[in-house]
Amino acid sequence: MIYDAFAHLPLYGLEDLGFCKPGEAGDFIWQRNTAPGGRLPVNTNGGGLSYMHSGMYGMYALQESVRQVRGAAAAQVPGVKLSVCHGVGGMFAASGTIIMSNEAP
Image (tube, rainbow, N blue to C red; front, side, top):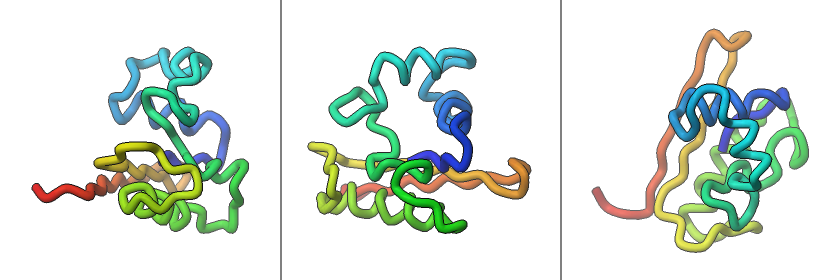
């Protein structure tokens, strides 16, 4: 899950988290890698731009991560073992990333 208060944030998130090289996220998304059934499904609840944005959307991104690792999401990704949830705030001056897993370390 990548906080998407603005349409460009998933691009930056994919690149800054190392899922894509700088400048490659747009093509990665265009090739439907982040869609349901893709190599790296992103914002499986629709994201803040389409699911809803209450002003505290980060909590819903966390909720979707929990649902995915529990196997209880409405748009469940088969075989989920971990979920990455990343958000930004403070005019992009701060960020936080949580990795959740359903497997013991």
